[in-house]
Each structure stands twice: as structure tokens, then as C-alpha cells.
Length: 255
Image (cartoon, rainbow, N blue to C red; front, side, top):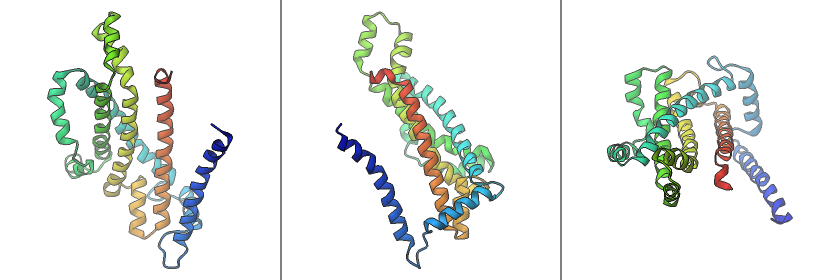
């Protein structure tokens, strides 16, 4: 890579941010604009970092949402990976479960919310349950896909070397589909964030989704924008962490 390209790739992110900020300023400039200015948004950010809304400052609301997502995604990852590798490895499991997945996969997770609320009430459990539903399908489908695209030559090499089925499963299949599993977890985290926000808008008194609906009800656009930025920043940090984990777990794949 030439020095010019290195400089260009270093400048482009800065230009992108500056373009967004310029667009923000232009949108918020007209007197009739409902979009908050940078100054108003900054003031609101400082305000909710110091003052409580419904019993919590902004970090508390972020942690509440994040806690719900992490618990649900963790459960979805464990159950999704176990079931996914089982379906990918066993024709019997595939014949039993794949038709079920194909029926339920197109159903939007939020469509389950009325049933979950009626069944579980409006506490923490229904929020975690609805996030679990949204996070489960990406993990399991990515895991199945990862199992399906494993190079058959790897299995052939294992057979030539005398590997048992147990060794083929744990030493070939699981490592080979790890990148697909992590990609599924990344997708499930995004899906979990979207779903938890929707759930918090309906049945919650804390969380980032609650802040957004509070801002809408009060006509507080700066609060909405700050909450949206909080979602984006947290999601980006989670993605960065998962990418680093992926790099550690799949070093062999880049050798």
C-alpha cells in the first residue's frame, strides 16, 4: 500500500464524520426545524448524564438495556450453537428441526410480544424472552450454514489420518464453523438491540428504548437523538469486542 493510499484511508473516516456533522448543522438550522442542534444535543447529553430520568441517568438506562441483551444473547448462543451443530451434523436432527425453523424464521420477533406479555406479564422475564427469540434464529441458522459449508476435503483428510467421529466433530467441524457462529452472534446482538428497544418502548420504565419513547411523548428531540447515539456507540463497541474475540479464536483460519 502506497503512502498516498494510507493517508487517504486515514482521511476518509474524518471526512465522513465531518460530512455528517455538516449535514446535521444544515438540517437543524431552519427556524421551523424540529431536529435539535449540536449544542442542544450536547446539553441534553450532559443533563441526562447528571440527572435521573425514571430513577436512572443515561449510563443506568444503557446498562439496563445491555443487561437484557447480553443475558438473552448468551442463552441464545448456547442453545443455538448446540442445536445448530446437531442439525448440521445429524441428518435425523435436520429432518426433524429444519421444517420447524423454516416456519418460524419469517415471523418478526416483535410479533411474539403480545403472547409473551399475556403469558409472562410485564417484568424483566418477558423482555429477555423477546430478545432471546430475536437472537436465537441468527445464531442457529449461521451455525447450520457454517456446518454445511465445511470443505469435504477436511473430513476426507481426517478419515485418512484415522480420526474417529468424535475427533472429526470436535477437531474439524466445530473449529471450521466457528467464524460462522461468531458472525451469527454479531447478527443476534444487533437483532437483540432492535428488539429490546421495541420491548422497552412498550413495557418498561428503564432502558434506552424507554428514553426514546419518553422523548417522543414529551416532544424532547434532543433526548431521542442522544438515546439513538448511545445505541449506536454501544453496538459499535460490542461489534469491535466480538471482532477481537473472532480474531483470537480463528487465528488458524488466517495462517
